[in-house]
Image (cartoon, rainbow, N blue to C red; front, side, top):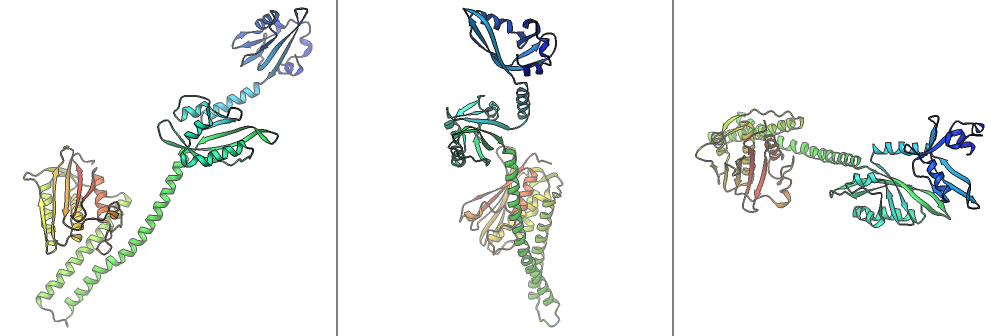
Length: 459
């Protein structure tokens, strides 16, 4: 036994002289002393015995021990065992480091790997397979790995690995996506180095890969938020520019016609005064609606929009809307109300629901120059919601605008009045109710908006 081994066991060399080896120490596997069995096998003619993994030496009269790997060699003379050579190495420290590393890695999404150049396969931590939802393993071929890489990332990643194999060392980390067993893609980052080189070529390529999917999703969300903030900033700039025009237009009319009515030098007959007063009233209502939309938008932004629910007769609610809106119809447009004979009672916020229907009718008025605007409701066949609709005989909505009409500040026709908030606010209100607004259309045959209100409201 060498001096280093004695030091590891805290023994002095002289303490071994004259002692029987079997009385001093043993070679153990788990709790069984296998040294007598090994000596017996050597006596019976076995020349070489490899120790099993996790074997250890232990002092029989104490607690000192350390893990070893090694071999027993039996030398024979004249057919008899004459010498036993025991070659071993203490790898207690390495085993401890390995266990600590595995313990630390088990709490992470970091997976060590190495590339076997001779067999052209990747040996990867079995946890990697389990993490991705595949049966546990510890290796896969280059082709199998290639199939798992996202097509958009495959050329870059496999090109980098091929460069490493060819002797072009690159310590740069690479990000890529891997196909999970459930069909989704997960982001990873990998980095590798050479374990050693022989004649300028890598002896072995080792590395780690780490799941960065959560970080990538946070990064993407932050980028989306940034992009939305930039878009929102542009929209608000355009909104402020548009607002100055939209507010100034009715104000100019109000101030101008008011001055005419109060000007003592202006010779106005009764019909002219009536017309000017009507124009002042129309522009005042337009300005009031504009300010109301702006206030509602600020409440939506601050999440302070209030709702007050009660049992409401939809026939009564629609009748109120009809009497208010019939006066706003253009000369060649008829307002039609389509409701069941027996009224349906719905738990809702009547003021907010009126706001939605009025917004839809006001929107229809802008685009309908002749024909009719019809509004009404029906209980859906599924018995879970009421469908409230507004239909017109206008030109319909162009295809390029259909996916944008519910966006804030968007206007399908920039020459029409308003700032593009009515549909967005109405959609928000319906979503507060637990429903939504859908667009049914046939270009050239008018537009129909359907507001779906659940019978069991969210409030």
